[in-house]
Image (tube, rainbow, N blue to C red; front, side):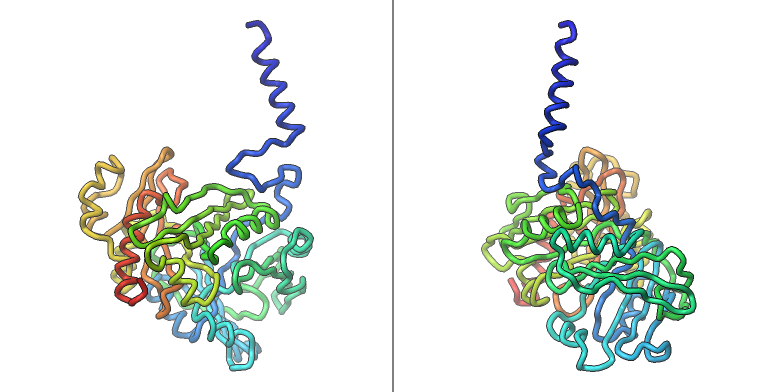
Length: 393
Ligand code: FE2
């Protein structure tokens, strides 16, 4: 044996280094330009809605958010009203146009209520913007300083799929309740224990999943975490394909779905038809106590997908021993999935607006870093029952 094996390992490691051999699951990330655009976290998610005042009430009363800030006519904002809601580290901004002749109104006419901006908190908005544009991002808003009596913030934005944006926000010294122009407007909510955004899923048009996975890899330096084919995610009626993209620090995860040929209209096609284009399908919010969260959300009137009783018949067999009371899981209709690393518990709301578009996921992780692959079939069959009720299957 002698030194043969270690020497061989060294040679392989050296060849891998100089030829830059790539992990097939991470094909589009170039290690030479590691983390070109370091993203600290999701700063906030901004939704453009038809009536921000009423939407804010819904998110406070139903989801347990607290209102922290407001911008509108009273604060000198002439063209829109925005309400900032917070729970844990999740921040939602609900904005509505105050007249028919601004871009927000046509966005609303086309898409209905939905996510307009997934904003990133960064150290240097200018550097992130410049790097992103150099790497092919489309400019939405050039870097600018936003300021008020509380200090200043640098802001810039790029386009992603559909009419959705990614803002870059950097603010070292800003001391206001949210961003410049917003006034403190606290209204305490009764938290259901949502802690942070776990992932945000985008639905893109047929054939565009690889294009947008490439955008996240090549422009924002994300890696591909997982890939689900239409074989993994299919039912009698519909199929979809999904790639999960993850930021370099692992804090931001963006699965991307595209429809696949099915016998009927897939849930992704239904979304694309009613949103009139690509957009955010669901925002997953992480909790440490899903039993408490779902109990409270149900009591508050949040509507969830109806999971059939049969799902629970062999659940114990499928997922083995879990910490939670199986009866409570069944009663609350929570989904459970196990993989090599542990398990997760999740449940999906029905769409939160009249169009069958944006919905939310409540998720608790017990070691699993997956997305509930084992639940896809049961989940999609539940979605299809609702699709059929809407005449869209
Ligand atoms: Fe999800």
